[in-house]
Amino acid sequence: MLVKEINYKETSCFSSLFCDYINNEPKLKSFYNQYPSIDNFKNQIDQKKRNYQDKNREIIYKVIKEQYKGANCSKDFKSILESIKNKNTFTITTGHQLNLFTGPMYFLYKIITTINLCEELSHKYPKFNFIPVYWMATEDHDFKEINHFNFKNTKIEWESNQTGVVGEFLTAELKTVLDELKTVFPNNKNSNELINLFKNTYLKNNCLSDATRNFVHMLFRKYNLLIIDANHKDLKNCFKDFLKKEVKDSFIKKSSLPTINKLVKLNYKVQAHTRDVNLFYIDNNQRQRILKNNNHLLIEGNKNKLDQKNIIKRIENNPEKFSPNVLFRTMYQEYLLPNLCYIGGPAEVSYWLQLKKSFEMLKITFPILLNRNSVLLISSRQMKKLKKLNIEIEDIFLDLNELTTKKTKEFSELNIDFSELKNVLKDQFKYLFDIASQTDHSFTGAVKAQEKKQMDGIIHLEKRLLSAQKKKFSDHLSRIIELKKELFPFETLQERRINFSEFYCEYGYNIIEKLKKNINPLNMSFSVIVID
Image 1 (cartoon, one colour):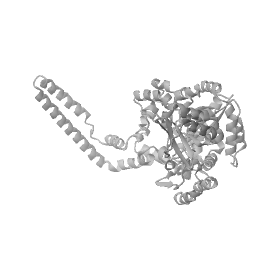
Image 2 (spheres, one colour):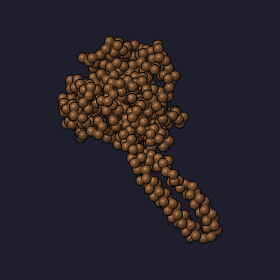
Image 3 (cartoon, one colour):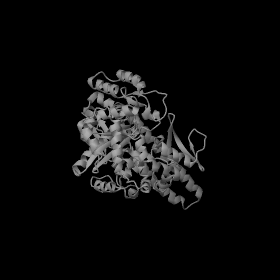
Image 4 (cartoon, helix red, strand yellow):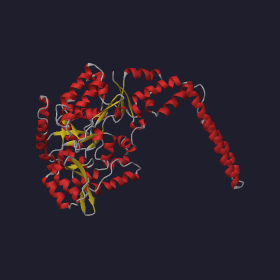
């Protein structure tokens, strides 16, 4: 049950750029194409139809069909895959790393937001087909970012000496992770389902890319989610002219720099910095940056200088050896797919806003940017505690010190807030400053010093009184602190820390169905959902 929707800004957990975009601030209109509203999708469809290379459809179809070979797919799924060849079919895409066991909880929110948006669009625009797509970031090479997940207070970690793109990591080593899951998961039917799912996907597929595809496919099988691994020669061959252009012209840096400067002038933090060449080179189980040094190019870790012609020739002959970085990947995705909307987290939305000019330079349609839903899951037990402790949903988002201070002031019969007294003191010293201004400068300095001394004294007394009242209500406050820590583990948003298995072990597949029922992709608010 959805119990509350909160403006992102009021949570104090998201950047000003992200919050201003979500709130449709006029000053950001030049940084994107269409704002994410159901009516704006008609314009997006028209633009994409005019600007998309339909020849890519057949190639995408063949690659995805090949990647799903041997997977347990329904007839509906096969039909949907066939429909990607249809000119009236469009995709809604989200992307994510190959985090072990999906990583943080928000992975599920990304996928469900994508699925639910497709359903909503199908009702609004029945003449078109909409396919939810999960674009796997198989070419990432930072294994430490994806090799673990948290189950309650235990970090489940995959240790490996393998190197290169993580999608190609062999999964036989994960037998030790399976053994650990059996010891930390509770002994019940739901846990056994997850353990068997892990065994039948991660251990029965050779590499992490195939394992992740099969794992996520089984989780969302009934919703016909299409999963794509774009680290494929045929797909990169479609994009090789753009790879060459980046090597020749450094076009992403040149085209995005004016936008980045505008964002800085508007006092926004730059989410991702561009490079001279936003490409990696994949060879010998390594994924290394391509660097520009004066008139030469270098592959990171290799001292041999390469001229531009050498790199261009390699792209022509072996495009699969070149890997777009996080910024360039956006253009690769939108060129390949008949995509209308990209669904990402706050950081992703922020760096996409840097890139509109780069898309325009390549004549690729810039997608609608939609934040994936953010959710705080609360059990009915925790909800009862909130009510018993007289805590509003909004209060639980306060910093722990702010929360305990606010509740102490509510509990206390004394007036702990000395703001009125401070204002009286300021008025009294204003009178003294008026007198001092009519005498010499030294007297003004003495008044200023005395004001500071007395103000510091009042602040000190206020803190002492607050501290004493906190001790008086320590039992009540300790229950508030305990509940706050349950809902915000390690003082961060639940969705950024907890893995879905923590809820699945308790609620089973019902947790996914509950989320699907309550997540509204276009509500632009942080959702609080009671899960039982």
